[in-house]
Every structure is written in C-alpha cells, then in structure tokens.
Image (cartoon, rainbow over the protein chains, first blue to last red):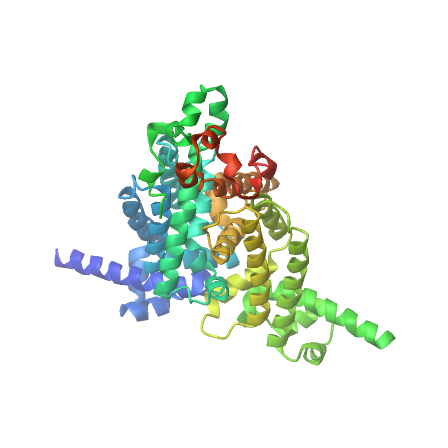
Amino acid sequence: MGRQRDLNRSRERILASATKEFAAKGFAGARTRSIARRARINEQMIFHCFGNKAGLYRSVLDKELRHIATLLESREHMSFATHLATGFETLCDSHDQLRMWQWEALTDQRSELIAAEERRRFLKAEAAQLQRAKLRGNLPEDVDAGLMLIASIALRSIPLLLPQLAELVTGFQSSDPAFRRKWSRFLKTLGDRIGRSSALPRERASRSAPSRSRERGGERLRPNGVSGKRLGLSS
Amino acid sequence: MGRQRDLNRSRERILASATKEFAAKGFAGARTRSIARRARINEQMIFHCFGNKAGLYRSVLDKELRHIATLLESREHMSFATHLATGFETLCDSHDQLRMWQWEALTDQRSELIAAEERRRFLKAEAAQLQRAKLRGNLPEDVDAGLMLIASIALRSIPLLLPQLAELVTGFQSSDPAFRRKWSRFLKTLGDRIGRSSALPRERASRSAPSRSRERGGERLRPNGVSGKRLGLSS
C-alpha cells in the first residue's frame, strides 16, 4: 500500500516537473535529467514510470487534456460568448500545454505527433459540444463545428500565443489583469455577435413568411425562440 | 555605381538567407555563419551591412513589414470578410515573419523586442484601417479596432501557428490546398457574420423608430445604408 502511494506521489511530482520542462523547452530541448532534478527524484524513476521521454510527454499531455475535458463538461450549456471568455481565462491560469503545441509547431513538424489519438478524441468532444450548441440555436447553422472550434481556440489563445502582439497593440502586457479583463470582455462581445448572427437566416426565411412576423422583428425566428437578450447580448 | 549595385545585391541575398534562418531557428538559435553560408557570402559582409545579428534581425522584420504594409493599402476597401480570407492566403505564401514572432513568444520574452517601433507603426496602420471600416459601417461600432485587429490576426494565422490543430480537427494538413480553400471560405462566412452584425444595433434603434421602418427589415438601419448583400454576405 505504502509503496504504491509513494510511487503515485513520485509520478505526480515527475509529471508536474515535466510539464514545466516541456513547456519551457519543447520536446527536443527538454532533458529527463533536468526533470528529475526539478522533481527531486532519481532519473531512473522516470524511465521506470514512463518508459522514455516520449512516454512521459504523452502522459503530460494526457493529464492536461483530461483536466480540460472535465472543465469542458461543466461548460455544456454556456453561450458561445461565455465559452470563449471562460476558455481564455482557463488558459491564463495555465498555458503549459499551449506552449508544448507551439514548440511542436516550430520544431517537430516532421516527426510523428505524440498522443495524436488522445488529442483527436478531446478535440472531437469539444467540436461535438459546438455541434450541440448549433442544434440549440446558439451558433450559426451553416458553420462547420470543427472549423468553429479552431477559430475559438485561436481567439482564446492568441494573447498567450503571441503576447508581444497584444502588448504592441494595447500597451498592456498580456499577463496584466487589466488586459485580461479587456480581452475577456471583447471575446464576449465578439462571441455574442457570432452567436447572435445565428438568428439571421431570418432574412431568407422572412421572404416566404407572412409580413406579420416581419413586423415583430427578427428575434422570433431564432431557433428555440432563444432571444438575443437571453444569450447576454447587451454586454 | 557597380560597387553600390553589388552591395545592394549582397544585402538582398543576406536578407533572404537571414529570413529563412531566423524563421527556422529564432533569433537566439540563428547563426550569422549559417546565414553567410546560405547567402554564399563572406560572414564579415553581414557585419559590414547590418552591424550585428540584432541589426540584421531588425532589417528582416522591417522589410517584411513594409511588404505587408503595401499589400494592406491595396485592401483598403475590402469587406472585413474578404480581408480575413485574403490575409490568410498572404500568410500561406510566406509565414517566415509569423514564425519569428512565435520564436520570440517562446524564447525571448525577457529581452527587449527588436523593431518594436516599426511593428507598432505597422499595427497602428492596420488598426486605423479597421477603424475606417467601422466608420463605413462594415464593422460593429461598439468593438475596439485594436482588439479586432488582434482577433483578425488570430483567425488568419491559427492554421500556421498551430498546424497540428488544423490537421487533428479536419484531417487535412494545413498546407493542403483543400484545407486552405476550406479555411478561406470559413473566414469569409465568419467575417461576414461579424461584419453583418454591425447592422444589429437595429434591435435597440427599432424600439424608438416608427413601426413602418421595422417592417422594412433591419438592413435599412445599417450605417451608410450599406446593405448586407453589398458586403458579399451571401457566399
């Protein structure tokens, strides 16, 4: 019992240390020796627990993905706008995984992606969530959920992907709470506009509808009768 | 005359070679020796023409920025949607500069940004262009032009910033022409929705307007009377 508990603790310490090392230097630049040192653990323990550096990398990603997957479940009924802003705030708390992806983009393009299947499964789950939002009328019908997922990741992660861009444009460091509030608010406004426009097929629909319904304004034709107001559009 | 022409040619060769080296390895990883070798030039020539590695880096960025600034001028009257899609297509032709920014984000966060002023000036010009689009009614009035610029850069660059994301979600490599067409079309749809929603203050406006104008639909209240159709919304 005690031995298993010690092993689990060591695993956790290694994972935490490896996350920092991979985020700081990427897969190629990371050294298991530094990871062991940071975790105050014998380097052999890493190989015992995770096989090799790639196994460790896979486990780090898997842990991060499971963590976000849990958060995602709790966001099932959020509007797209809130989802964007909340996603950005979550990334601000920790963007180690994002940095790992970014290192891959710069350095590991020709090698096989580690944990591709785990990532695909996670992304599929999030795309499915956007698909359900479409069915509820919270996202435009004619927009592909997968591409919308890519756009959503772009919008919530850009200040962390290119912090110098945020700073050059706004004068605030992207880690500044003032900038973060600004960007969250902006994502809400933008997300509302993208979500709100799902009411707009109205223009086509109203051509065949009796003029009576036109008089009442477009909102009535929003699927599910969810009004703009209920999606928090007047931010 | 001949000497000056030779010098200019050498400069151009060095700049082209340096762009590739900086994009591949970032500022810290780049070696003037490799740049000289790639340019088939004596390494001393680099110091003669650009002072040092930082001077060369600044010149590469400056050249790239001037190039995009020229493209930008020709896009003054594009709709936001077309602007997004065209911006993405330009990046697909060359994303060396984007990679340089990405390297900075990962490795040079604590050092001073090279060519900060040149970049700020360029971004200011693009934000001013979005501001003018707002005044023409092609972008929502209540959205900050600077933040919209950041969002626009996020949307047009994400498949190049995180190519593995695009591939995991869509099954296409982000360099695949099929993916590029898909993403361009998506950006047009999304950009139309963001631009089109600038007509939506209608909801508030129509409360005080006579019911007659409501019957005619929302488009009439778009600033400048620019109709959704004229912005190419029915793609």
